[in-house]
Length: 339
Image 1 (tube, rainbow, N blue to C red):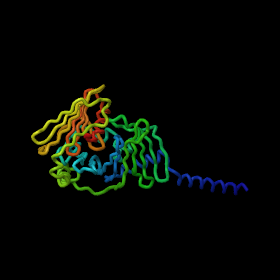
Image 2 (spheres, rainbow, N blue to C red):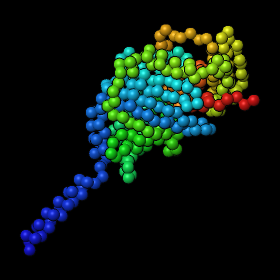
Image 3 (cartoon, rainbow, N blue to C red):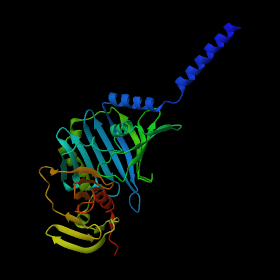
């Protein structure tokens, strides 16, 4: 009898161990698996859509990410309504650049991007945020492992939380929701393609090649009439200030619009569009941070932020707005003048 009991006990223990092995992975198991996948990666190509919910209407943009080990990145941000607004964040052996091919302009940053801030469309950054948040929440669904973590946005403290969805089979991200202090999702990144260890050409991460190839696309998509037009664009978010002056300056080859806002915190917004701007022989050096405005990628310093959008140069300056407020106002510069 005792022998039969021992046999049954052994079988029961074996079944329990088998079921445990086949059960859901723990938080630690998934993090370990993600770490291992990153170590094995020689590179990846990603296609995604990013939805910004920071304005009166949702704005959707396409994102193509190329990464080659160890530290080569190419992030192309495309505007579905206007190809002239396409931009590229490029990191190669020469530095970090933001390119606007249609305007023949480029910024060169003194920065540790992408390692100095959260990046919702970069696999490495998402895993880093998961690992560094000791209080990260973890749960499973039928198809995903879900992590709820804090973020590390150097230029925008208004987005402190995120939800990261990891595919159970592939261990790659499928969706990221970046949320405000009330846990409302203001940014959503939805991954449609995630290709592991693709092939790359040497020119893929060369600045001149990226400027020339994408500039040709932008040129063929524009008409002369479109190049000459400049719409006056106002911020939807004014940080409590009101428009006190609007000044239009006709240039020999374009137009400049200066908007002055006054209130508890004053600021000035300048928009400028030229029809015969000469291409810069070398990138413009910037002392500041890269900030993704959704509709454009900008250069943020202590008291100003500048960016390009739909063929127009924008410059927002204030001695009183914080960095977060500068970003909030700049993100909302997408509304046209009401006649």
